Image 1 (cartoon, helix red, strand yellow):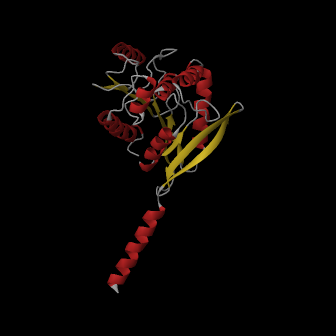
Image 2 (image 1 turned 30 degrees about the vertical axis):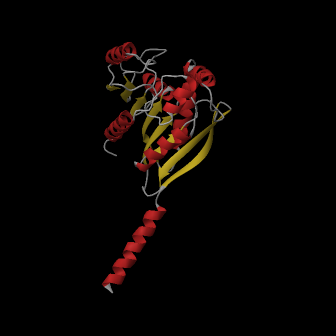
Image 3 (image 1 turned 120 degrees about the vertical axis):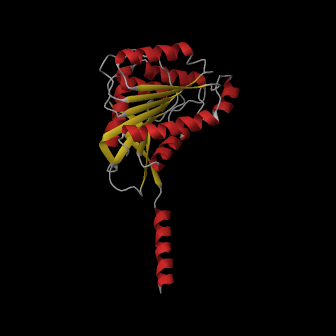
Length: 264
């Protein structure tokens, strides 16, 4: 009888494990009449409300890579929203279009802020989210977006930028930044040279920010994206995947998020 009870218990555990998994769903939300097409991911095995993380896409737009990162965050126990900063889910298949889409948003910070905050508002409404516990990560264009949101004093626990632009339209002011910051860049990335890293450090120091900059020798732009090698060759761009830098930056981000959320 004890063996039968044990087998039944193990079977129930197996069924429960099979049913508990990362759930992902497409969501439409709005900013001033513009439809934004996002993706929310969470693990239904996690009970109650939990911290939330916004994921901001590369200059190619909201795509499967962005959703993959949202799923990874959900597997870590967070609720993640892959946002749409371009509107209507626009994606670029050529650098010319990507540059155009990214410039339209990055040169218009009030617009970027409204679209970012629309994502925050959507997340706060989710039953799986603790509205007081929110962070953001971003890649390439998205890395620049989350850094600028921190500069503007968005109510975030932390932001992580992966090979994101370090340029600021308006430099951070002392006492303005609420979020802790971590930035990952490649030392062989011509788009984010050592001079820009040095200027960013100086800006953060003057602003009194709680920040950390991590640089990877030999890493080029878009080093976290496995598709970077193919895209670099196709469009003759200095893009390249770096598995070691990708793994290390994600591990450091995992620790960073636990720290900013107080171990949650």
